[in-house]
Image (cartoon, rainbow, N blue to C red; front, side, top):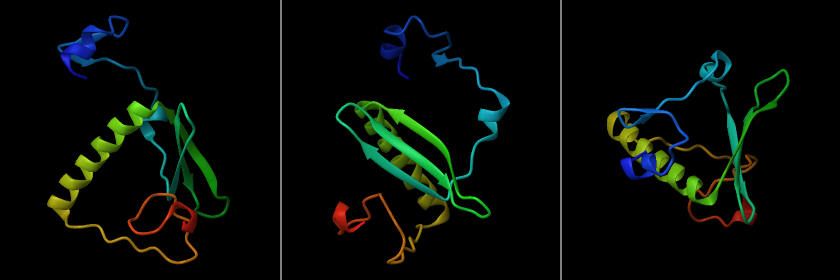
Length: 113
């Protein structure tokens, strides 16, 4: 968060330009996801994360964000991916015809996915 945004949020505790947040052990442990779906309404984007590993596939997280935050998140993820691929090489996607993919992979329309 830049200084201008920080100044407009006096309700958030900060130290040296960084926002201080609390996170419990369960949150810090994280969740592993083997699939994700993105959907949207007029006011929000939903990101659902699933772990499809046996014995019982399950949804492990749902994150709901505003459209503007979703766009910032997307730009941050694109930047991270670019840095990753520069360091480790291009990630090759292996998508089969029976795989449900809800992210745009290029030339397919949303209905084909």
